[in-house]
Length: 269
Image (cartoon, rainbow, N blue to C red; front, side, top):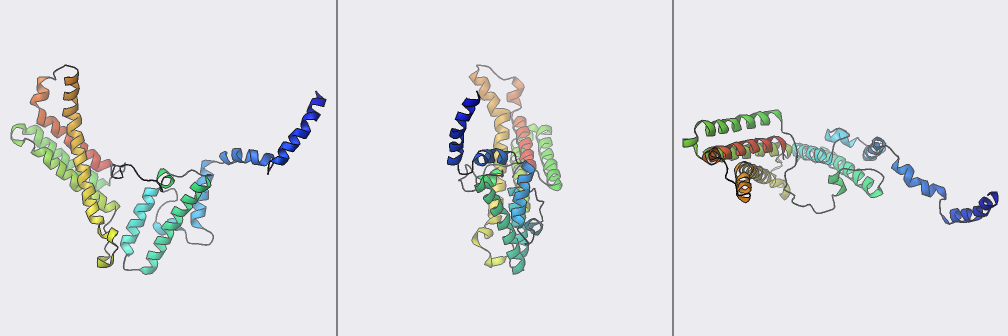
């Protein structure tokens, strides 16, 4: 047995000599994978801060564990406040934003730290970029949306014969207004005047289009899931829905529209 081990040692030594870093090269990926997630995040934050430079997270007014969406919102908000007023502050904000994003992208390229999806796939084309994303609205917008949709729902339930489809229409309008207010808070309209870049001048129109799109999508989904889909499933199964289902069509549509418009206003952007 000892002779076999001694005979195998020259081959083992030659294989290690052919490896540039010996066993260290074999163990490096394992040790790298064993680095805790928290320590990896600290490396990204330290790289963003840079030696002897101003903390970019403090410049943007965000915590160090902020995600990419929070970074973008803080950047837009800060730039909207100082655009055309303070050139030095504008340069500080741009430098802080670039520092944070470049640190995250560098970590991605090195492959030794996990980064969020927005940064990980920043160089790839997005499928359906206008898709709704999860984000909770402020308390006042939540309250406004709840009151508005509750009034529309009460109108539809208490006066089904005279109301018709009007509660559904006004529910969509109230949802659009709430979503536009929410978009304006997350992506403020710049006040730089005629000297603003073309993309910033279009921000107000983008917010309105986004709010109307979310309201249309909410109204469509509400009507589809409360009436159209159950009726289609029953037809495919050769069944007939109860009489009250067809008799209360407008009320069901109003319930779905009000519920989905509130959910979309409260929890999506």
